[in-house]
Length: 448
Image (cartoon, rainbow, N blue to C red; front, side, top):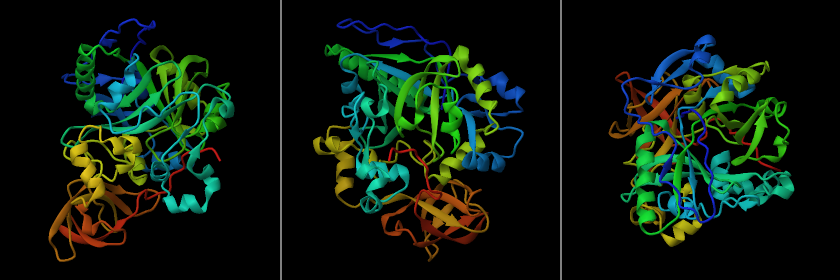
């Protein structure tokens, strides 16, 4: 899910019309695998390369997959995620553009001041139930994330996880949208949906510009690094002047990192651990990666560890766990829908999704646990009577729990945690149980 090259210089003047797309256009439909700016760096450090979403990326290094996974949970790991699509949305109508494509409330993401995050959203991301929040208000000031410049001492900005949806209610992709203090939206979406996402945004820009709107798109040719794990903030703090204690989960700021200027640091990740994603100019990415690895807490990690970490955290992989035939409600992602958007019913697919919010949906994404042979994608899920009722979408042995974990879709009547089921693995049936997600508690950094 990443990508990189030289940053496109862009100056926006008030009232000046914006070009439709800035930056070098890239097509994901290439015969030759793309390489991130760290390709040679990976090889030099023992990276075992594999094809992923049209890119050549490390699946692991000299350490085993399990060792890398556990090191991330106990210390921190550095992931190259430069294959992901990074874009900037410019212009006075940038929020209008994004809200015409996603289910989230982008207008509420005001830079330079605190924002109330929907309590259900916060709890879902942190792995808590809303009732836990009400019993323990000191966890996060009753669900408020204080992120104003007065509290943080700098112009940080807030982001949100959202979904591109179709008029049929299906999920076209998941993405993170950040409203920056520099006057643009910074968007990160999946490499596997590169062409689709870019075309979706470009088409809507053309439509809006034909209506006289002021909006444009720039592909950001930066590398993207993810530093993930409980030691991540401590490691990064040694290379920045900003106080990272004042940069909570899902906020972002531009800063110099280990001598590399112009880096956007966002407190987020795909592992369930505290950590950051750093959008860094290509010319400085090898220097930055080298500087981070000088700390003994940091090791390189690849796609294998990233997949098992995100599964333990209950996070979806687009194309496996969610796709164009899955609605946010079916995917247990209703919390991504902003309250204002729900009330207005003005998001793509609202005619299909809103009734599902208010009534019963036929199927839901659930977590599963079992012992014995590990469940894998496409394993059949059966009722206790032996009737096929669903399919596993992701599964692996959990290095932390020493049990097999998976997620998949079952009819709503089978979705309650504790429900016993059968799964078919290697043509044999074995017991499984519907389990709450995340399987492993998350450790996102939230101001107390």
